[in-house]
Image 1 (spheres, rainbow, N blue to C red):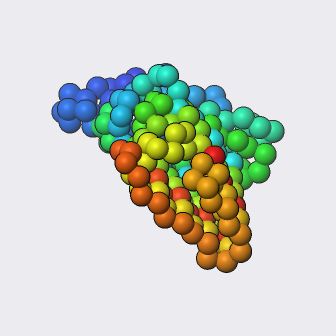
Image 2: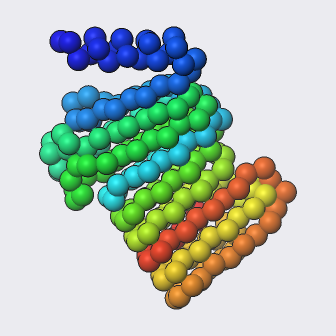
Amino acid sequence: MRTPFLLATALALSVASGAAQTKLDVKDIENHPFTADFNSGGKLRMYLRSGDFHIVGGSDNRITVRITGRNAYRASDMRVQLEGSNNSRDLTVSGGPRNDLEVTIEVPRKTGLYVRMSAGNLELQHVTGDKDAELHAGELIIEVGDPSDYSRVDASVYSGGLEASPFGESHGGLFRSFHKEGNGRYHLHAHVGAGDLTLQ
């Protein structure tokens, strides 16, 4: 019973001495669901292990990490680390089985996202704000919403397919890319090394 007490004490000291700075380090997500406050309109940088990730915008002002799939019971060594303030945070997900495990990260609907991931499937949905996502290998799907919301869009793949129907673009093969300028307020950057990139 000492661990929850020590964690609560550490968080209280962090808030008291560092204004809004916090640092969380949680394992065994299946039995200890991860959630933390995060302000709408904030900036969130994510560094994700390979796998199957879904980043979804929600109505709550918090970050929540959930896991599902046949290997969820084997994810006791999966680690979620979060540090920063309620307006700007870094989230790192590491460890755990690579197959038959889906990770869902829910964030406030209005969030500026920066995401880096090695390989797998990465999907961003229902998020309004800047989007900067790169995947070395696999499939990257981004729901862009209204294309007029963006002032700058650039997307590229080194090898694979690039589909972006909201912007009237469709390419396949090697070293495919496009760039557009607009009158919106957000920036969109998306890149896949080898695989498929879809903006929808």
